[in-house]
Amino acid sequence: MSDEIARAIDRAAGVRVVVVITGDLSREAARRHAAEGLGACALGRALTSSLLLATLTKGGERVTLQLQGDGPLGGITADATDEGDVRGYPVHADRARKACVGRGRVVEVLGRDGVVNVLRDLGLKERYQGQTCLTTGEVDEDVEGYLRVSEQIPSALGCDVLIENGDLIAAAGVLVQALPAELGAAEEAATLVREAQHALRTGAIWDCLKRGGATPELLALAVYGRPVEVLGLRPVRFRCRCTVERVEDSLLLFSTVDIDEMIAEDGQAEVTCNFCGERYVVARPKLEQIRELIAKGPRGRN
Image (spheres, rainbow, N blue to C red):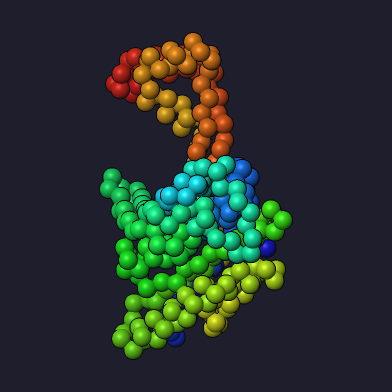
């Protein structure tokens, strides 16, 4: 099954359902960050959750999800757009390699004492940021809690990652939300959201992934329990925005003394992107050009 996100609706009940399949991109992220076991499971859930959050944005917006905990993993950051691009990384993947047995308990590596931060970049100077406390340490449940508390949206959100014999086999997530409606319809929608929440907490996604051949339609039915109208499908992928040019621009933030030390010690600069693990090497000639620009000051770079 290919990675994709499906937006659907139950018009009669006034409920929106979003399903995302993320097996390939979760494997790619785990490979890039050498994440294994529960660390890979936590990373997959965070990437999947951030894609679900990105469906709540308007076109061109970006959502950054940060979970910081007191467990060995330290935390996870995931960054997604409504176009289906996502990237992310665990803080200490090497400290969180406990085996993932069954559905896994991500709280063992993330911890329960910490915070959930959600940053929405609207493409403007100001950004919207919300924060809540971790309550379960299971990533998806805490993101669901964030939607209820910080954004006050009645929601059922769940993600699961299937790992067998150490290999990440599949990953997926589902978001169910009530749409604005009249009082009577709102009561029915709220009931359906609660039922979906129960299905998520009792392993509906996990069971579907375990059987194999999960599709957005099957996942939606497993969680929501009623037929929905699929409004559109879109591919999703692990994609980072880092480039050589961005790396070179970042070196302009250093002082001439810092650049001189890089040239003297290594004859080059090595920069590794946190989000994707890509390693960039800036050779001496380019470093010398960057040093000249720094020496000229901000006006000299224009």
